[in-house]
Length: 166
Image (cartoon, rainbow, N blue to C red; front, side, top):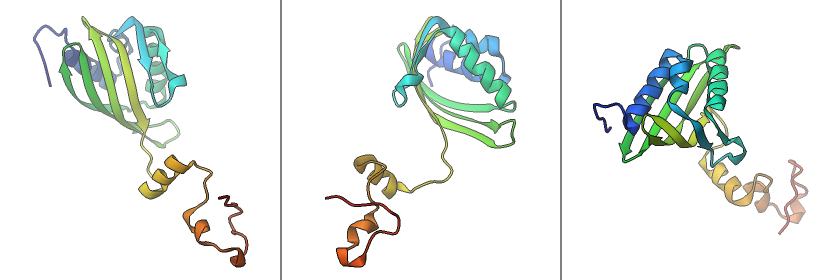
């Protein structure tokens, strides 16, 4: 962690942001972002946005929807950039757990972030294992299951209804 006493560096910005999140201080949180802030979400490009006011609207919903939200962050900063790893957890109003983990890279000018590349995602508690995820990634989600490849025409149709085409 890089820190300087003047509070005007990327590490100090991440610490201020973390404090604002944990204090549920919407004004302090919004003050961490430049008016023309640009958020890029490379994994979900359509979710990118611009502006401090959108940050404020997002966090107003988050604080209202997860009233006990707490965050932890680790970061390393150099020059005008901070790489940070976050965990945000709490309980949604409907009683279900809220858990996000991921990385946010911040570009900082003065005491505000002017841009971020955002990779924070909900934690998936179940679902397929690594073999299935890799298979889906390279073959597509609609690809035949590996067992279907073992079937011969004499064995009859696949009971899952998935047809295999080679």
